[in-house]
Length: 317
Image (cartoon, rainbow, N blue to C red; front, side, top):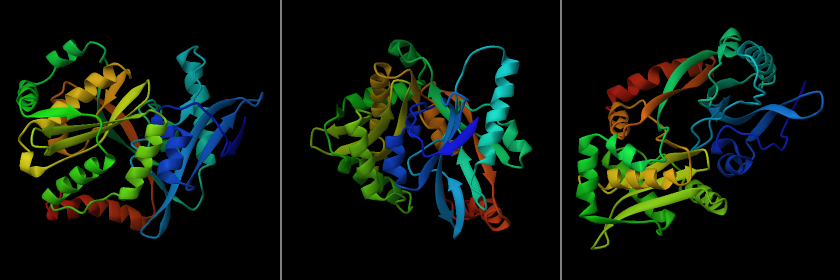
């Protein structure tokens, strides 16, 4: 096998690994490691994104991107042979990672075999996303919702209508209000959101839902990116004046119903924040593990160690 980068390939684990997605969120700061068989056919690939953190080079995640996984062709056969092949491929991919660089990236949930990273000195820790794996029968999904979620949905139906024809500016405004309520800095570049939205519309891969009352007030907005495999609950925001209207629960439910006709899985994108985890768990979703792979210098390691402690001191949630 040989390895080349920046090759045009179509094999992916998720929407995040499509070249058009990466061009939209990462510009020229990404490339792709590709493993080929002797016949020059691609059997594995790994898109990587380079950035800087505290002035140091780091291979990490582009904006709005949950994971970047390693795609490995599955030829069936015995598990022992598959793992041996995967081990050989992962070893080659790891050897081709940028040198003199730090690493902090998230692999796709399909990448369950991560031992080669550990053997090469990387730190690997689990993260959790929440998913609804069987969404074709929406009545069954509805039965799996917690009662308080169903109550919020019913309450919201009496106050708002759900619209899918509003501008991305509505979502941006709702997000800004959400962060302002939490006394947090708005972390996104608005032009980056607009650029991604344009690209997703070009590929028929987004759904923007807004909850609007009869006076024209927007209570909440939710944004989904999807393909025929997974629909991701990518972004959302709400007006704090209508925080208790139940609108967000209604929009998520409508997003699930939309996904049931377009994707196989609904992915909440999870969270390590307890209050968010509690909310998404209320929709009957199950936790799914993916892995954070790290190898940083002592300065960045100390920064990562201190970051949650600083957040706790600042009561950052």
